[in-house]
Image 1: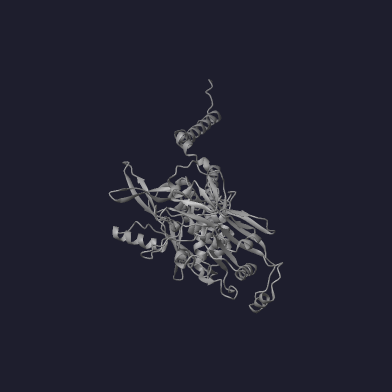
Image 2: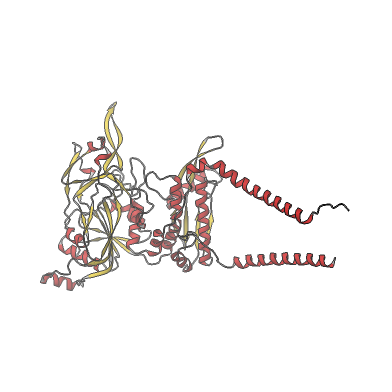
Length: 575
């Protein structure tokens, strides 16, 4: 009897010790940031740059996420990933990052909801409309705001989570790409809002570049993160020392040797340049009564300078089977012209190959009358194609006649034989001056000495981007009212293209915004289920998941019963 009570006491004691140990382990774990990530790409771990940014916060950053409500599974997954990421960031910040989730649709009345929606849109958040099917197969419209507002010391910055995708991408692929980009979107917003010193960007003028109104949208967007100004290259002095980057958008006048020297000197002192150049002069404004115009080559005087840097913008125009539509009058009814949208092959929709972070996970980018780019040998300079035409494109040499009737022609895909012609190229590495082996005349040398612009042979960490379309950064302007349309917005279709995001990524990369670019370069493999197999094998796996555990439990119970019966039940023996 005593032995039996002793065994019972030992069993209770062991159980108590196990429970106490589990409680202690959980309490200790709550004070430690322990996380085991076994994925190959470290999907569930913060990037080192993110941890460094969180650890360096000097004040509280508050994030209000509007991705809350009754969502379809894809958006619910994105919402949970956002919460998990913010929890990790809060731990790394030592409590200096706070967040909350808010349902923008949960307002007391419809008027309050509309007012909040309008406020969020003005703050920079982009909504998305969903058609939701109810249990009675009825369709209803649901507005979702997949984004957040970041607040810091009286400032605010929007962070949009939902990305675009390549043509033909499924909603699930877009959501997964957005989840891959989630850490970048949040960290980019936080990094921009806490930044004290802003790099300075200057849009050049003096050579027929785009007027301020035509680049006002991108200039306004950049001014949220950088100091933006304009600079006349025809001025005598050098580019000011506080200018970190030049944007040369669609110059039409010839650059003198002095301005070319100024640009080369700017590059040699570590300045960055975003070139948006035209190989051929072409514009829809040039359409006359005959609905046609002659497209002529553009000679800017920059050809030799760019050639030394390893780039040549060709004097041709690209036609692409993947193109944006334009309205064309095809008849009249009751004295009113009738228009219809036709694909305009001179307005290609280009994409990156997904290999470089600048052009990954972006909406198609609308270009207008774009030329192709050739790369030439330039020792020390690495070239990376950022944007290219589709596999169904072709180039037409200039001079050529551009006729609006091309839009209504039934062209075949077989007529577009060229593939992946480069239209935007990144150059980085060691740049050698175009003037390093040239002797300046006495007057030029005195000018250089007096202006403190000495010749420099090379720069080791140079960086620039060349785009063979001057209209990459051009926004539409309503002539009658002066209204500015968002960059990349197609007024005829309402489609928003990825020009603005590409421009922002390009500027951030050129200015070596490494804290966010490293995150943009991060690639996470989000492995999707095969939808067809899921549909075909759904019943089988449901039976397996529900039935197999029960069968194993019954088998284990039967086996245990059988073994106990053999061990303890003894047959009766006749005495």
